[in-house]
Length: 235
Image 1 (tube, helix red, strand yellow):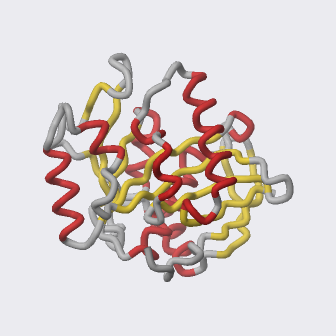
Image 2 (image 1 turned 60 degrees about the vertical axis):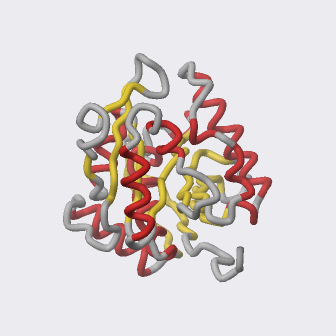
């Protein structure tokens, strides 16, 4: 059975290492060797919350994502990626930080073993939107590849057309396009797909669930353990 769990990065260094190795291997398949969200300083950051997809018994990691909260210690990967092209991203992040708190859903990936199950295309973004409510935040930034823009829109994120070329940037390579998106208010999911909104609210209300998920390759059971441990711990 697939398990999806969350934790603060420094609380599970072994899992973070598996995350890094798996993500790196996937990027290398596509010829991507430099990406800002793949920097490894986040493993020591208590404000980085990891979403891990793994086999419940073997603990083989099939994918994951990170929800990195702005604190002033580290810039968001989207700032590092886009700031040299459009410094408006810095102002946008700062405004959200001061008006309620913000973060970035970044480092999203899934291995080929689970390709076509909807984990990378739907489930991880849904989980990111769900667990953000535990972190007292206002918004979520995300930098999407063309194939994941639809995923962002399904959970209520909008393209930030004031940045770049109507939200578009050539990143991480000159022949690839990335889109800057933001879920502007994590509690107002009025722009989300109704089905996604229902699922996000369900996971917020009950972070531990067994759910039969349906993807392009069929139906499979997932155990969700989305209550982030040790949030009360001082940092």
